[in-house]
Length: 448
Image (cartoon, rainbow, N blue to C red; front, side):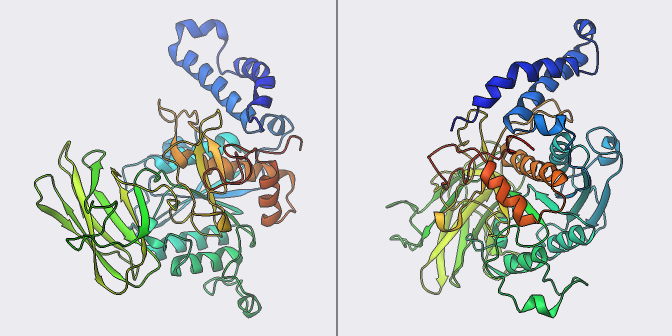
């Protein structure tokens, strides 16, 4: 189905409404560049509303009222100044960092996600939570808090690949499934009756909370496959190639991470262009099998990652680069934790014309469809001059549409909301569900 067919029909009306709804008169825009820029932004947002099928729902008054959405992120610097602007006038916050500093990281990434939510579902309540870096347990504490605070929807656009085995398994996902399904022993509402149920493979929506997460911008910096030793003992990424190039994006820390379901022990070595070792892997904090080699890069330098087996039988593994790109990649299986779990709704990124963006992570096979949906990016925002893009901007769009749908059907279960979104999604890419775009572009039903 052509996803923009309906958008074309309403585009003229949407643009006109956007102009009429601008915050300043049209005749003053020539003398006020800021007002003109804001009017153009409102037009772009109106187009985006139409693309998502949101315009009619908003006109009828369904704007997420009565729904709490929790944003889990690591960057909320300056959130107080945004209350009543890009955020609701009142937000609830909670910090699970060891230092107790909610705004410790100099980043507004979480605020960008929150603005998307507030733009699309302006009457939903927002909860903001951050956690201790590298600590899966403090992240899970944030999920517990969100549920106990009444959040029916959780949105997360931060990836933590090494917390998983790359296939939605491992201790982290087991614990997350229990929390979302309401079978968490740490929750006062936990019951022995709930423990008797088999929840190992419970899908998203089987509890009272929907968890949306970005699929990850990892398709071009990820590799997965079986370990194959070359002549020098290091893994061959391709025949005869035992070094995989790593190109940092800037001067911030680069992390080369290996994870998988096997008990085999591996080691990562990172070398510079002269062959000098710059980093050797260590066990990843709070996990039993993942490892990471981290380093601060020099400007405009290329590095090379090598993997060797230390103990155990060769098996499949994943390797991903955070803070840079990888030379030899496999896009399949690149959906990153937490989005790789069956209890989480993974959202990838596509262009407004319906093409998956090449960096948007892909799944392994149709047995566990990932990503679940895609959403159009970039998303026009006011917090900064550049539009918000990537799968980070995709996940909160899906979460916001779920909130709008739930505001119309407050008695529906999470599973019913999830199923309705699957039915109303618009097929893109290859016909039918696929491992690049899932069920298709997230969108609301034609009529409330």
